[in-house]
Length: 317
View 1 (cartoon, helix red, strand yellow):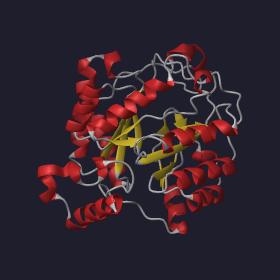
View 2 (spheres, helix red, strand yellow):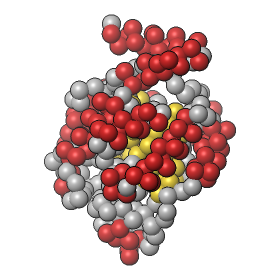
View 3 (cartoon, one colour):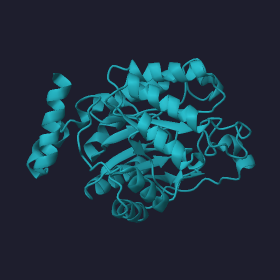
View 4 (cartoon, one colour):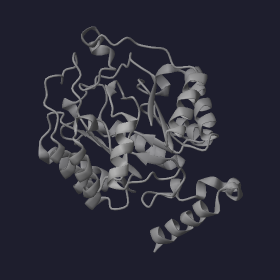
């Protein structure tokens, strides 16, 4: 489940995003303050009760360095408290340096989302406020800190098929495959530079998911933003093509998402069941193989610990 805990006022210039202050006059989106911890924790409890095993918090920041120590420390506290609920905790806070990544890891962060969005070649047409290398540097800092990497892209930004292939090639050629790769479809937002673009079709999404599954066979491929525009049949085909996760939540960034009761009905019809929290990932590095528990390993359920041991043996086989 994704919750944006700080909306609007972002200094970045991502052409698809309503959060950017560059087009706030056209989108009408007002900058809001960082949510209070009580409200965030209440949302996390509701998500857990609804069946979510991972809670992701997002902010419309360039990065923690932009907003200062106080707000970042508040987020670190939220991470620790959500983790204490027994949920995996993900965050997307913009660009990180190595020290900030280390602090998040110590607070209990399970995963960090930082999408590359598109290919290196097409990226300058998506934003001019940062470069592709900035994205890769943050991913490297996250990986070095021992946090799972959630990194994918967006289809429908005006790119060509070769850009989609290039993006997936970048992800597949990282030193270690991301544990999670979200495949998003553009949801055009009125007032943004890309408001008149046509979103990708369901079959285009399925093709990208299928390729991601082939080149990153152990990665969790997440059917993400834009899913609301896909039929149940298209979503079923996406799961058959290799998707094995979805994002839930009332909104993804500022765009609407599928109703939880619709998802529950679809999952039941397709025979899909939720993945428990803290089950080891089969891809990536040691950040999700069970070693993160350290001295607290004795508190972990035996079934999860055994799963971690099996995953480690398979990764080293």
